Length: 316
Length: 259
Image 1 (cartoon, rainbow over the protein chains, first blue to last red):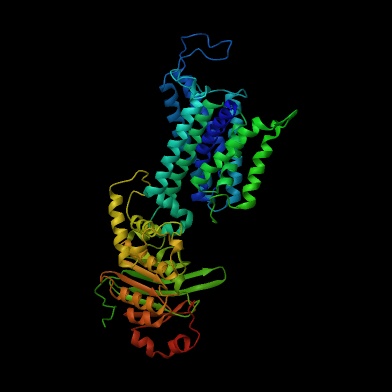
Image 2 (tube, chains in turn purple, brown):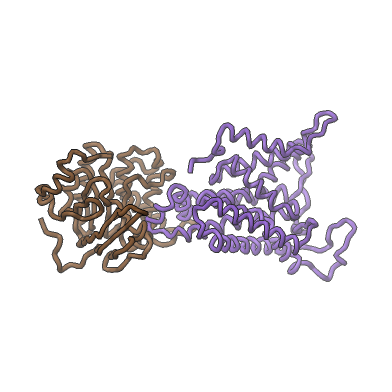
């Protein structure tokens, strides 16, 4: 029973992280019909930038030798040492997303294949540069030392504090914030209108290019936040970029491209299936947990067989 | 009825020698057009005459192949559609161009917001309330006050056309261009539409493409007749009714289509 609760919590928190990353991906697609294949690279780069800021500005050089047998650093990290890198990395990735859109994608508006190839190329280049600079060993962003490492839930279940509280809360706040922006604000109304008819938005006197800039800033920032959360919750390593791009794709294919609610449901489905398949695919002596990815794709096939546009997808 | 060409007032719209080709198709040939402030102008002509292309050239959907477009006394030949909209030009489209996934109120809200400022605002603002008031007032003006919260995709065809006129009007334009507003409307809806157009504020200049002669000739003071991409006749509704060329081409041809 305790194991089931822990595995479920694992799935929920994984889903929270998937949602943060995939929401940016799906919003960009919904408005612009751009499949930003560099979204995973922005995720990983966001994490690495936060790590770099944390180690350069906040690592207390005076204490300890930086070595310890347990692998854990002796350095004390204040709350600032986590939030400052989070905010800066998020903003840097947001600006980078705008640059990417203005320099590479703007003049290829409506050319889906070209845009996909350009963003794939950029993510390959970024992946190599990140490998060259940060190396191939996985690294963690340190959570503030003042935060507890774990919490104890009723039934004596212990679960990581950062993963169980911070990531979950961040996803809820981000989800609610995005919902309010999309439903209640001017920008949100323009974005939803743009999904229906971009030229008409322009005919009303609205500068669509500026709305695109705003959307790419927001979408890329979400990848950046995801990278910092993921880098603290799991770790940063080469290959995480493609892993999170793939996860985002699966989430929005399940949920329906362009739908925020769909991204939430898709992330929940993917997170829970991942977590359960990792643990419960053992039948007597036969251990199939290595094949858990197949269950993920079975989920995908099942959803697409019933709803080809995803659970909340609308025809373009 | 006043002749619109009282030379004292400067033109609100002037097309000079407008040409537009699409590949091998010469859709608009050397069109000159002048519209005075406050004028009610109808553009008539059989299908394929180039009426909608002229509309698109005026509103800035695409540039002319050659020639010059002047709006409100400025050369706008190379300005994009959104800048012309901000100068005070509103238009509707032949096929519905509403935001189907948004409510009636949100559509009108965007219509009012378009020519305003603060498009990127991601937090609610106190000015949103005024835009919403404007949207609601316009909804009742076009008879949709009971459907404010309904999604546009759930409206009937007639209601969608009413909303389109509302979308064009809510921006408080100086020049309003309607592309076949009566298409697909019932008899009663056409009468309502005609009354609404006749009741428009006198300061608004109106250019109308319309196949329905009852609507067009009742609303217009001055009629431009197009055929094969060129203007063939201009005159008052009476003159147009009596013109033999117009009869041969259009009125008496029996080929009037109401798509």
